[in-house]
Image 1 (cartoon, rainbow, N blue to C red):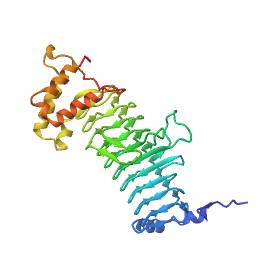
Image 2 (tube, helix red, strand yellow):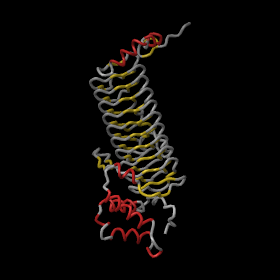
Image 3 (cartoon, helix red, strand yellow):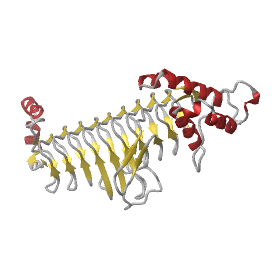
Image 4 (cartoon, rainbow, N blue to C red):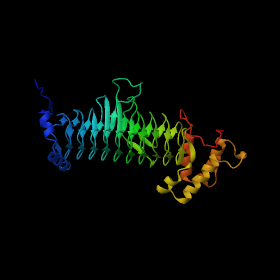
Length: 344
């Protein structure tokens, strides 16, 4: 006896026949005007905005809210308590949200790449089944193929991503990470839990945020240890393993990454003046490349820069010094070592 298989209320053979080339052309042309393919599984309680286009074999769960002008390409899915802002695009195979307590929120104009998984259960063994967990993504992020971004590990925290970030293929952002704005993560950048790429401050109660310019950049195949902080305008070389903080404006590289100087090209590209860069170089040299043995220990060199008649009045220098000091506060991990620095 031939079994009957139905998809979205139609037999599978009927649904497949509708995917002929003429239909594909019609579907692509309807993306701007809005449509729901008959094979898509859209729960009647889901909230769809105007002009939403949902392709074949997509899923939209009962608690989902999909903003105006969103496009779901064939085989993409939205699960759980998930809110997708206006004009977002889910490419084929993308999954957003999970049937877990808590919430996933995407802002507007985000692109979720092929087979990317965003807003699912974390891999922290301390996570307790039934606990609420959260992910908040800002606007205009390009999250490329096969990337995974996990929700927080507990209800009192959140995984948060800011605006205008490029997260290239096969990256991983683990539970409770905080990612700022204008960040570039090259392929296979892997962030462990609680990593902060400065500076994105989130209030889980008011849903407000405070941001700086950020612009940190990683090359490919970078691994960042849990609880590390990566400063604004910094650069991490390809294949690096980060086990301590990367201060603002600095460049690091290596299997156990060490400081390699300032991210000079990044500073120039992002509008720092020649005078600011000269001041930062002078401060860096005084802190990490002392001219003689009488320059004092690390704390004395930091204090010397803070009290320097000229450098102390440069905002970028003060920000760099504060970034270094913050890395030694509380349970922070300290900073990546300078390759000729003995750690005094």
